[in-house]
Image 1 (spheres, helix red, strand yellow):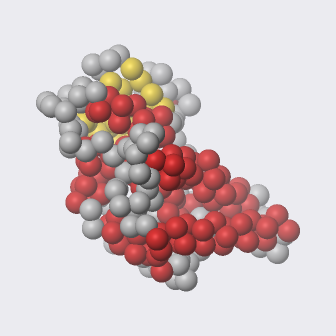
Image 2 (image 1 turned 120 degrees about the horizontal axis):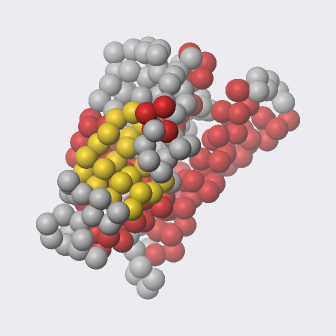
Image 3 (image 1 turned 60 degrees about the horizontal axis):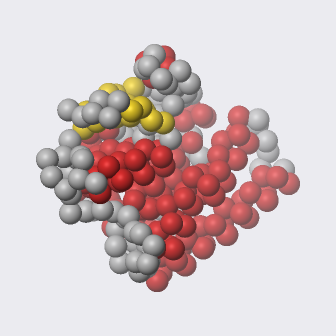
Length: 252
């Protein structure tokens, strides 16, 4: 086994499992459970990962360890393209290069989730931690920004099956967490008026690689592929000790 993926439940490390499944890469999962919201000691004890970041990978073949989901995705894509992962060169690249149709869209949307969307979503997490009321000016400004951001994504998906056009790519893998599992941390926004986003979530949910990745990584987690957010965030219920995120738990 070459690649070890340290996976934190209900986290963006699902991106790496999804990518590996799409590329048919052999990998080993080391599971870690939130304690009860933040990183557990088991993650911090992994050599080279003192801050407890997830995802975190160890590539024994190259002697490399790496944090940050975007960086890990690029590393795996580059190594796969060079024919160094798996028994033979994979047919799927899941990325685009300069000059290819959809390259600019691929580049933009690959970075969009972490640089724009997730930063916006995280504001609401901090609003909740700081007990900022919903009538606060900064809160209201962020609500408007979220609606505008989702509307732009929805409009783009009206013209494109996937974020980079006709081809499913790592841009979709980077984005899906922010639209789904991240909702367990807020904001508790409905997607009911964003028909194209809902179509996109349905298409992602039907991909065998996505189903395999989620079943291997978070078999207990209810997948948030529909219009409605959970009834409460994990912050509101005290973390993963609650059943709000489980398939057998609370209602949406």
